[in-house]
Length: 113
Image 1 (tube, rainbow, N blue to C red):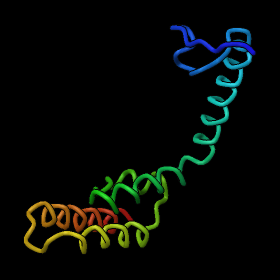
Image 2: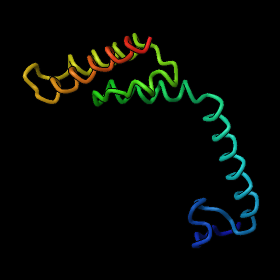
Image 3: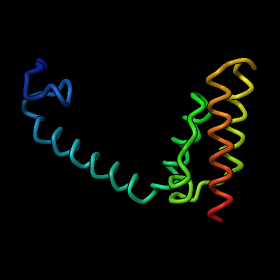
């Protein structure tokens, strides 16, 4: 039974036997390549998911350029923003600012279409 030790050179990988270090490093590099390839080939879907989540949870309004660049469907963003708005109090200042920003976004997108 071998004892696992954590050294400074293994700290990024986690617990790894020193004899397995080359394989751990190889797996880590391969995984990084696969993740980058996935994000590169599914960029639009990833951006839509991230933007929708930010809109739903925090009321963030994307820029018109981002919406056009990634072909984001407006009904998805509208429903996400509507969920955030209904969760806030009606007299909230931040809510009023974000609603006006969202209206500006819609006007900008209609002007560009």
